[in-house]
Image (cartoon, rainbow, N blue to C red):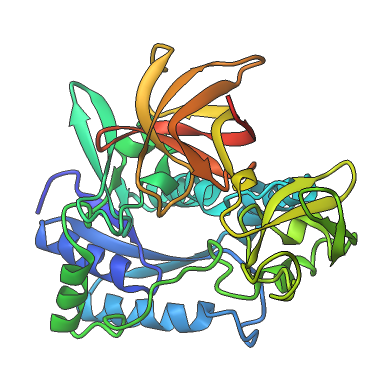
Length: 362
């Protein structure tokens, strides 16, 4: 067994963390596991899977013969993640709670708790890599490009990276499923979670109405002509198609309608048909800037993603006013969304990221 090698793996009840725990044992680490519950809903709630996830995590822990700890971080999640999530929606922005959840819960509250349990490091089932180069820790994309999760980890700092392990960074999702099946993990065929971090997969607009009032307004076209009423700006996002409920026969063609803009002062949504030019912008302003290592020199040429599943886009980055940055894309980007994260890359190295404040055409 490795010296100073006690690792606590965040065991979520999913296939990725299950296999990550298995790989750590194979590598000679002393492994224990932690199941985190971070959302206080009734386990009878049709969208709440915490009790089943815990049972699945326990089955894996039993098979691997590792101790499973449990903890409830609901208070921390509400104060550090969810209140910010609601505040951003009230401003008409579309936040990404998974990014903040990683920074504040998985790599802060969990890390602190693991240290109290005597761990030297924590591990998760993220598809990303950590490389120590000349005493600096680099966050690199996972080798499986279809599953790379470095986008969601861009708020991590040197200290957090130095105390973390990503056992899945070098392997493909297909191989992860095979390992789980070969070891008879109950999670082997379990589908991946795609819902809000720790809250699960539930109808999003319906979920938000529990916390935010319906402030109805107008949906208008690009010329300001009234189309129908909306239920409140927080319940819509830039580029959205589903849920607008504008009949296919409305307008000049049968093409679908999309949200092109949210006007907070007039409480209006601008909707356009088809692949409209109002959906595209080549520049943006971002704030809340975070660099994983030292801040790079500006202006900087790099690539960036404005959403998780997107391929990296060539761009230049320069200083803006009042601690903001300006990003100019080589190609116009569809549905740039205020409140979402823009994450910067140098090849497969994640440099850090920022929060989109506004978009424009240069």
